[in-house]
Image (tube, helix red, strand yellow):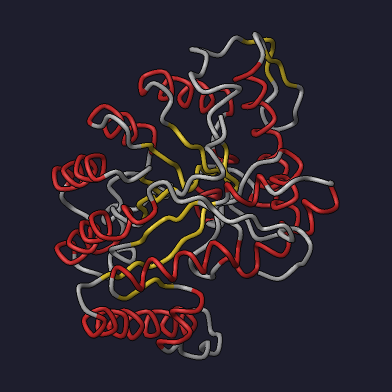
Length: 352
């Protein structure tokens, strides 16, 4: 069941990362507040094998509690690393979550980018692409066919029933995370939207996706349903918002330089306020945020926005929660009943 491509959706992401870790009860209070405030969904990442700073390595377990505590909020995975999982078991877990929640699961998938995790599980990272494609094929068939079998090299198995049947038909919405032409082409062939990156931003993905959709003769639906990512810093005054943006920019520049040094690479040019507003952040008064969102929709054709209020743990939780509340009360209502303007040339060009 694909979400209405003409309706704007504001989601949350980035919580339970880095500085925001350590208080499960606080996270549950946050998701209950998000549900009451009208956010569309909340997304979490899959990472494994770290003793501290990683309380949620297994996303279905977290999703079960979040979905049990909320009425409308959707739960999304950003991403499930398909090559790490047996696709029958993962398809079954997702189907159960979808059943338990009455159809409030979004499935973000990808190939994974951490070879150390593959190595610890005895999986050759070089097989990630083939395992990804094989697992996706199995999962889609498991959700839509009475029985499924596979002779794939990674996970062969005899005919098997997988249940319960998903509530969402033909299956829960699938979003693909990826930058390479190969992975983006998988999304285009299936008509799946993309989970668009925050760091780096979507500028690498959208042209490749548009090209693939155009080659296939596809319509704009998968692009419209794709999910953008932005740091979101609303404030009652422009001065307060710009001060918060400047603080975040300084921290992000330092982090990027440190990571480049760890890899023995030259540091990337530091970003300034203008660069952040151009491609990475939405910041300002509620009215300024509304205008920036409208411009972003017009430029990309995407109708979904994942809001990183805590900047993956770089912004303290009290400030992130205050921004989340201000956005819900002063920005989101401006988009109720908002009709996305048509973008007739959505697939006409390769730029974003």
